[in-house]
Image (tube, rainbow, N blue to C red; front, side, top):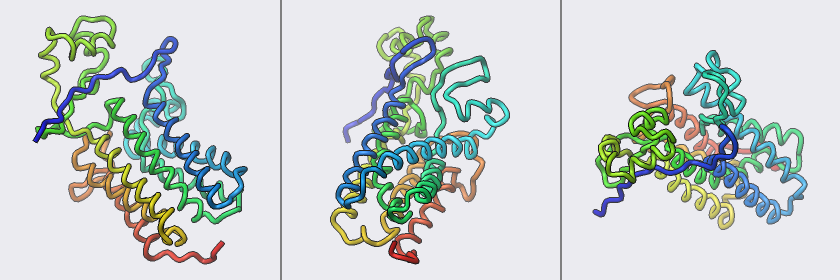
Length: 308
């Protein structure tokens, strides 16, 4: 089999001013939200729903996603921030070791899912043009498309990396293995971006490159699988009568996405403190199981009380 191994050592964004930097990861979130907005616009148009409800839905979704993802990460993986750097939970800055713009680092997809469900419930309380289940059945199509780009953003950032592997799919994440301070010290190059580049470009630092282990590109595994989650949901919505069954698309989304997440977790490194573990399963897997079960419930058991 042809080896697909490669070294991953990219620039992660553009410096704007001082400590402010436009990260490609942030741009992937913007792309995800914009594509999601476009998909929902097509759905609204197809089903003859007034577009006046679209922008509020977009705002609720963005806020619910970001707030849920951030709080989920803190509660599930990094609860020490509550006592050590509380304001960094809600602001894109770190105050622990001086003031630094960091962007929103640490976003959990399980928290995002919970946040979106709560957000759609609050949205439905204000805008009653369709049922909550109708909204969830369609929003998850956009969410599935967005998940593709978020995981690409994680890959660009060299985060949510996989376990060490000797398979032909291994990737060496240079910027995960060496911190900025460490790479400057190891190379003697003052500019950390030039120092990182030298590891892969300058034979003088071959020993530093060889010290970096190959790992599973778990982010790309997920991103690739989520393409099929989106395509399946889009097909079921457009080509089958299952789209008329309240809760089916929502349940199918939960089943597909969290089953993928469950199995990819086997090749992932822990994302922080593993607070929830059992039977050899990590926190990500334990949190995925309830979503899978809820998905099965909505696909095969749930019956709406009304047709509204």
